[in-house]
Length: 471
Ligand SMILES: [Zn+2]
Image (cartoon, rainbow, N blue to C red; front, side):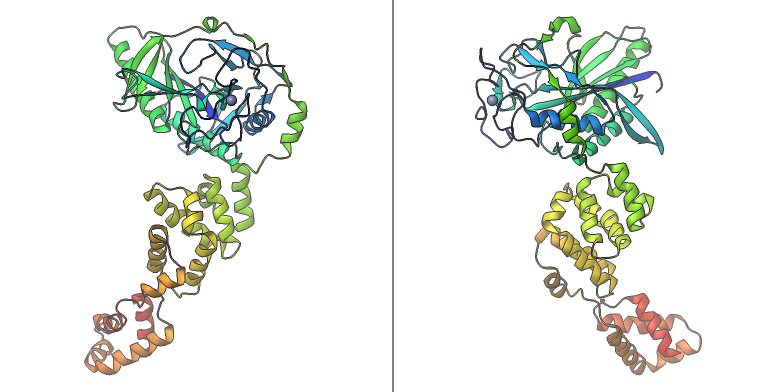
């Protein structure tokens, strides 16, 4: 796939902030009635004056720092002029030739090898309003507009055209999301939190831009479709036209929207209502607040908790999972905690399409620790632990009550010993068979104990005890 070249423009909502980029309207628009979080500024009324949200610039700087980008000491907002119904003032406040930061990179792992995906630039801009279509963008007869989203702080992160497969693009986006969530400026679970424009070209063909893909799976599918489409054109001796396409998520195809607009079509010029931003003071404020990032956390988990690289690598994929682990590991053996969290709890959550936020709600770290403590003390079997985890996630309840109600407390060793002796006493024939070399007679005796405990005894452990008694 080396002849394929992919670049991404990722629009990230800084959706953990309280207010919009240029006014004080709240940004949590997902659960509000349409057009309720608006004011003259974000509605684009003539004469309304924007004021830069300092916290938004700080959040943007935080991201740029974490992405190893070169933050500019002086950055300017520009008007990007175009008409679209979601943009009532006829221009979007964005950044052009003096963006917040240049360069930077994101490290991904492709088939076991590390690769740095180089970034071109990072800039701030305002989100336009949101159009909803009845049906799809291509078939709808009308659209509705909600301006609650208008003015939500966006960060546009542009990569160099350095990716060569849809898979690399997906890995890049996954890693970017992890980093943004670590920084606590971004909640990726919200609809529209990350939207991607993907550029793709094949050697000899024109560059095609696929606009506004709203899921990572969508990006991978749109790119795969587009690469196949372009290859087929080239194979048939036809030209790949330079154009903008839309990804039709329902049908997994891309459709032509328009010929590609050129930069000069936007008539960029500096926004006269905003002063340039000098970043040095903000940068100093932000520097001290940068949290531990995934790679550092992984190193620390290995050192501090004695985890294997494999476990540490998985745990840091999600900052919530990493925090969950640390809380459990503060009470019980960290390696035991890591293996249960990575191998079992993560799977159970995935199965329910939940993240570790739900684990914090349904099976609190201290409850998980308590359960694993029982396991360590052999008061509950492995199977029992899994059953309690599932019950806690689906039905809730108290750990002890669940174990009691389901009869999951393991039977004490002394009780097993007593039942073994009883089985030996009641089955002299089997004992004789065993002593004369018929090894399968042991299974029969163990079976008697299993029957007496209704399957709650551990068969391996019981067999061991039985053998000891039989000498
Ligand atoms: Zn507003």
